[in-house]
Length: 278
Length: 229
Image 1 (cartoon, each protein chain N blue to C red):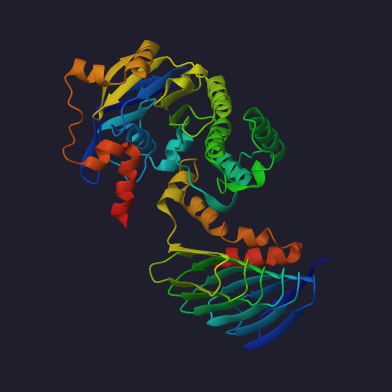
Image 2 (cartoon, rainbow over the protein chains, first blue to last red):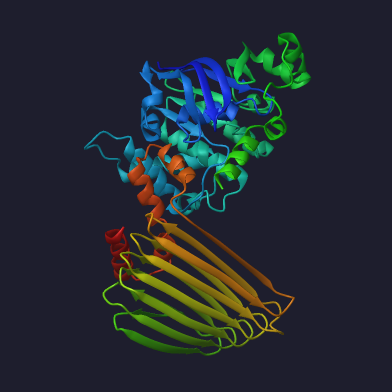
């Protein structure tokens, strides 16, 4: 069994504090759902765990089986067993999906160990079939020309083959039609074991028709304000977040006059940062 | 049946002319392996229903130029140009390509994958002209440039000269260093930075290699790129 601990995590983007002391603890064999209104830091949390370059951890810790994750490079985090299924995965021209996945699987092998080609092809074919993906997928360039749904399935395909200890799924349900949602949900659910746990970021209860979650956490204003079971998600789905704001005496958001962030959420934070880059 | 011509550019100056008859299909692979500083000039005329594929390949650290004019003279003529160019050292590599749509219902597709290293300069002067009356013609232009050092420069000029309303024409150009977001994506799957960068850069060459059937030539071109990156 493995353990992922997030302890009093504070994260800033370009000097603006997004996460203000997040505490979470996950064990393998558990599925944790993180919900919350737009712009409260859910995607920031996901990207920070994986080590995205735009997010600065100002204080706090992330530990994987007691090891300091924050001192690890992005690739090291992956090889140690962390995986991030991204909202907007990159398109890599000229790199076929099968070559990419094979290279990533090779990167996990001990020195001198090899990955038999036949074994790789069989496991790739099997995973593609389970995700009901197009047969030409291994020969297509990574995510290039993929539909939104295909990209999400491709993230799950990589997850299935790389077999992480913990997968962070950042809105893996967005852009999926009903059938694709079921396929993705069932595939994630099938991975649940004493060697695999997941942190699932979502806005909607519908994904949980297929994924059996154990815990639900509500993230607001950069902190986890409430944790509970599935009843918490059902209440949010029916009533939204207003009751919680009232219960906790929270203002709408305490980020001041930054209208972009307030209205459009984490995606907008990203866009705003991209604009800043230019 | 398509036929393939390989033009290995080794002389200081080399000029070629091609006339494609009705419905003729031809592929020309122009390969400058960097052994000389040279200028390559090509002129082609395409008749009705003919298809010309031109793959311009260069891996050079010597100043060189590619100068090509392709005239699509009759209905259904199609020209696909793929540039995969690598320049290094202090060299200047210039690509001057003009696609002339002189008749209605002609098609051109022009893609550029350009890599500049060291202090080198690459100039992509991409031109397509649709004359008046060449209706229902299609022009696509794309340029992707990768600068792998601070001193390396790529200039792209994606020019469209259009004198007819009823056409489809688009162009796009993006130039920069390796995308941090792409690197993050590959590294998040366990590839170290060096390996991730290599995959991204060699990915620029792969669309070309996918189109070359000749195993020996494909291997030779691939090795030239690998050795210079």
